[in-house]
Amino acid sequence: MSEKNQDRSRAARDRLAQQREQDRARERRRRTLIVSTAVVGVLALAAVIGVIAANAGKGDKDKEAGPAVTPSGAMGEDGLALQVGADDAPSTLTIWEDFRCPVCAQFENAFRDTITELADSGQLKVEYHLATIIDGNLGGSGSLRAANAAACAQDVGKFAPYHDVLYRNQPAETDDAFGDNGKLIDLAGKVDGLDTPAFRSCVEDGTHDSWVEKSNKAFAEGGFEGTPTALLNGDPIFPKKGDEQISEANIKKWVAEANKGKKPGTVGATPSSS
Image 1 (cartoon, one colour):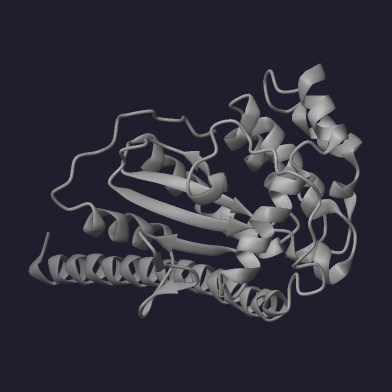
Image 2 (cartoon, rainbow, N blue to C red):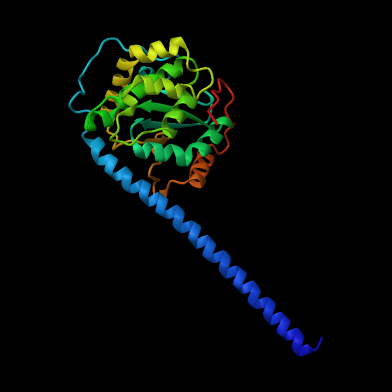
């Protein structure tokens, strides 16, 4: 091959390499735009929910409905936390949620796999707290009914998978479908071993209604801006931690930083759902 042809071949290869790099750069920008758009959407919705939550529960804040029946294995102050993960995990993620809250579903569906991975590996224990702010603002009883059903699932060690089923099957915020106990029982069929006579009775009887109302009162008095509220060792991480926006990578980084020099937990591990 002549020197001139060799130069042409090198030039062609160089152009091809440049084109491939440009294609890769465009793809990276496209992915970044998709992720950024999703985050902006979540934050916009979070702001709306935060405004709604600011006035949540004021009408029935002092409502009392008989003795609270605490779900089996509930943890924390006043037994209001439903824990997933090892008791001795070095870090704690506290999450306040409402099963009718659309941003809560977005939070769960976006970060479920990451939180599950960290909990299952002993890096993190998750303490879920339940609120009913959507019932208070839009009417209906879906927040309360779903929270009671989740507490009934907790009684038989099925909270985590049932919690995930509820969020994967969440109706529109204005649709009070979760106010129907039959719907909640039907969804229990998606969790192996949960749909039993005892579970059905617990759901139908509202066994944990007063406990849910007690939890919602704690939320209303806690000064939180809205749901979801997520705290890593007491430090807010949703929608951001300091100047850093929440993401799967940042959650892992924040937990790693908090756990530096500490051993993973192993005691009393509660498996999360897949």
